[in-house]
Image 1 (cartoon, one colour):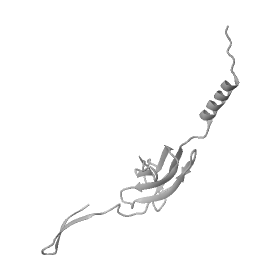
Image 2: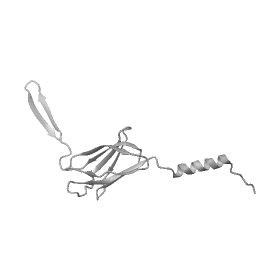
Image 3: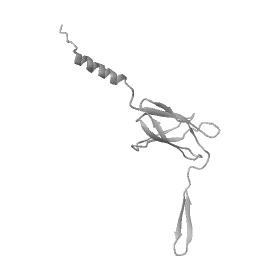
Image 4: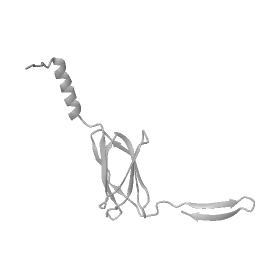
Length: 135
């Protein structure tokens, strides 16, 4: 039987590798609930989390109880945007996520149209405006 000795260098290497495996994660999680002004859940809300430094965007949809979660996000300043039919778009900027953190960000949506665009064409010679549509 051949025995190998684990020298000081081997012990240090083993110790460092265990430290990496069990060390603090280098990502974080943002989760929360989406509610209307009465406090009722808003299922099916489109949620975006954007890292303000890199511009990386992740998307999700709130569950049937209004819950959303984004795991494995890189740390940094984030913008969270929520969009749902019949509600105004809600945006939270400057949300700071640190490594290993689980951050709860609950969102309350306000009633109202998400957006409305009116398209028109103006005739320069007659100064007449022609309505082409509303979206």
